[in-house]
Amino acid sequence: MIKPVLLTPDTFAPFGRVLQPGLGAVKTIRDGAVRLSQNPDFLDHDGDAVDLALDFYDVAPHGARLDAVQAERHPHSAQLFVPLVEARYLVVVWPERPDAAAALAFVGGPGQAVIYKPGIWHHGIVALERQTSFASLLWRTKTGGDTEFFSLPAPVVIDLERPAQ
Image (cartoon, rainbow, N blue to C red; front, side):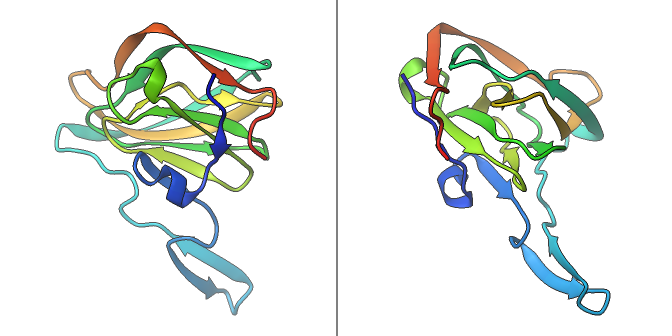
C-alpha cells in the first residue's frame, strides 16, 4: 500500500511543477497592496499541440483508499490543475511506465496548483475530504491523440485513511 507524502516543489520536481503564491518571479504592485507571483512558460507543449483548452473537473471525494486501475498521460502537453476551493487533493504519478511498485502519491493543499510534465503517467486528480472543483489547462492537437491510457496489470492501492498533513 502506498502512503502519500506532502506535495512540495522539491518532491514533485521530477514529474512537473507546483505553483503557489510566493514562487516564481515575485513583485509588489498597486502601491504595495498586491503581491504578484508570475510563472512564465509554465505549460510546456510541443509543436503538435496548438489549441489551448480550459476544462473543469468536479470531483467527488474518495473513501479510505484509492484502488487505481488506470493511468493516463498527455504526450504533447503539460497539464495544469488548479483547485477552485480550499481543499486537499491527491496526485499520483509513475516515474516510468505505470506499475504498482513505482507509483508515488502526493497530497496537495489550499493555495497549490500542480502541473504534470508532458508524457508523465498519472492518475486522474482525486478529491480527499469533500467535493472539489478544479480548472485544468492543457494544449490539444488538431488531430486527437492528446491522451493515452494504460490499464494497470493490478490495482495500485493508496492509503487515504491518514494522508500526509
